[in-house]
Length: 363
Image 1: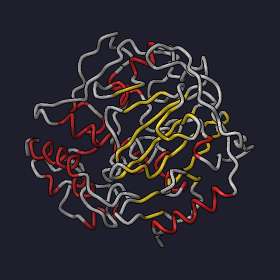
Image 2: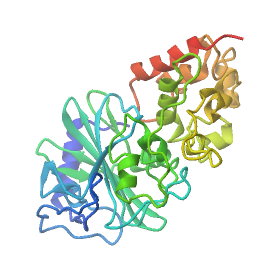
Image 3: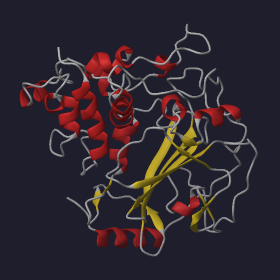
Image 4: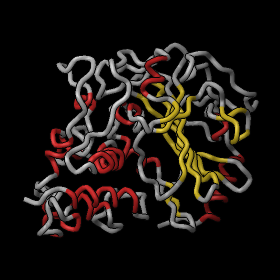
């Protein structure tokens, strides 16, 4: 069952009518300077819930007062160097770390965030703010998360629907349960706030280098900027970056489905910062990555997939149309990847994948 735009607005107004909410608190070092900022005036009705999330997005700490165009000084905007496709929606991301706190990066592949960490992601469709997703670490192993749905009056209430909300243009706002299906792939829930994605030169805002300079990483790497792995085709980087962000970070890593299916599509920090390579290791060879080993000329391990596409390998060199990673990323049916929320194909991302596969020499 789906919910219409009209239903969303009714739900939002009903929830707002009885909402109580919690303000953001504390100050965080700026991503560039490490200095503290101050927040705007908080709505007087905001109260911190003992459990769960505030019912009103303006009480999460992202905005100054009740102005969705003004952000609290202590939140840090960031953009990963490779990003997850969200059916063409424009996204803005923000991170809050408690004052003086650092991310535990003693294992560069497994970042652990300090208690009090908050993360937001805004989604705009056609320039209109549709939803704001929120993650809040309230205890050592206690994350609260949810989505706030915006209405025409510029208000956003916590979405409590048990069913996905499908807007008229086909864009889907997921349930909290659906969000969890992807975020289980994060070492500590958050996706995109990790060494590889923030170390790429295309990352912006709170990059790996800026977080390290601000003292926000417990064990900063010797090198804070990396490049995507490349091979003789000259087309591997874009394809591996697409697979990392869209498949590897949320699911296909050793933390998720990759452990079960042996289909690992996440680029490991250990591939960029090997323990025995010194402070300036050479660029990563794409053919030496876990992703290459798990895909190129490899058969499917899932029986239903092998039956549906009997002539396809995970990657068939020279033929993207006989390669499962392209076939499934280019479908929106029972065999689609990703298997939920998305209803539109990422033409640019899947084209980069096809270009690399077609350039791989056939055996």
